[in-house]
Image 1 (cartoon, rainbow, N blue to C red):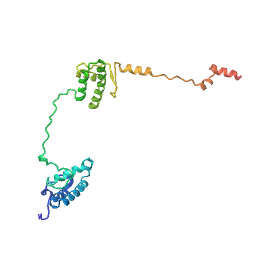
Image 2 (cartoon, one colour):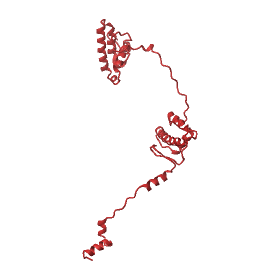
Image 3 (cartoon, one colour):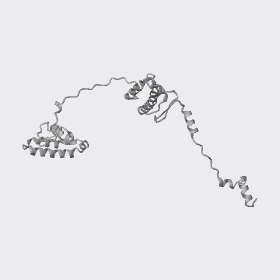
Image 4 (cartoon, rainbow, N blue to C red):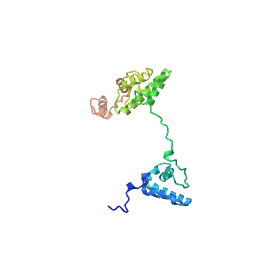
Length: 236
């Protein structure tokens, strides 16, 4: 097969940043051939405007112009000499690698509650004031149920939350076993079974007073008021 005049992409130079395409890369490679620095800078600005059109998603970044100039330098092999509004970037091979921060080796037994909530429980258990410690216990129990439901996407027995709170705090944060959490986990009702709470809510509701239907009663022959009215009219 005669391959004269044919050049495959696999035989060409590898594209540095594929978002801009090979044509932009070849335009940037031609920039050093412009001898006049001012003309070379104007040509670089024009290429920047074309790069925006080739990769419009880059405009979503607040500092996209700075990134475009960095990409221009990177594609040129860091050999470009123009009057850039930004400092030239440092070549990747010369950048110092960040120090590895390491992995956490903490053994979290109650991972579904979250590490920060565990720390809050431990801090609350050190509270010396009994009233404050009790109030914190109920608030933390509510948050524990919310975290549990977010992790498990199911239901949880309130007694499980109460027992876990007692274990994590070393017995310092204790809640009565008959306490109940609402389904939304917003409030923990202290020391009252759920059936008793519902009974109290029903008893607290005001009973509506029955308003007598005067019109219906006046047409009832057995009503004394009806008889009296009929006597006044001389019909009885």
